[in-house]
Image 1 (cartoon, rainbow, N blue to C red):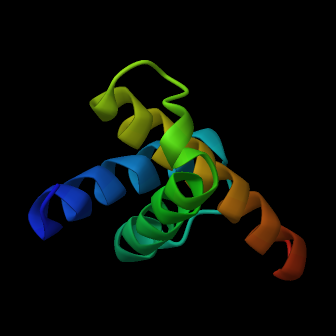
Image 2 (tube, rainbow, N blue to C red):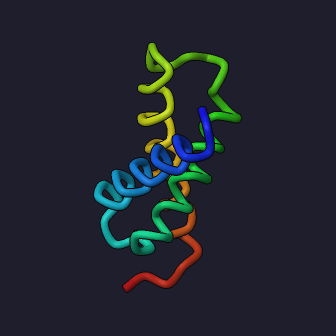
Image 3 (cartoon, rainbow, N blue to C red):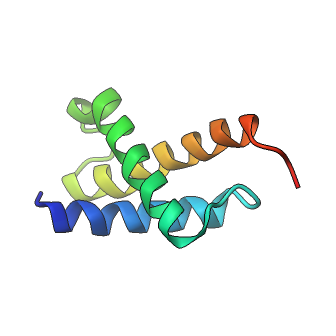
Length: 81
């Protein structure tokens, strides 16, 4: 996957994670960054397992799960509203 594809997948993952984890989003750009980092974390941890069946599902669902986890961890260390 190229850099443009990774940015699009990261943006979608960050957007989905921001919708799922209410109150811990960081705006559009912040969620894109969290999506990219979350997708990278999931890819490093579970990338070779082919958890969700195909490559696109692994990237989208795995990246979203990674971004959700990252948002929750970041939420533990930031001040609640």
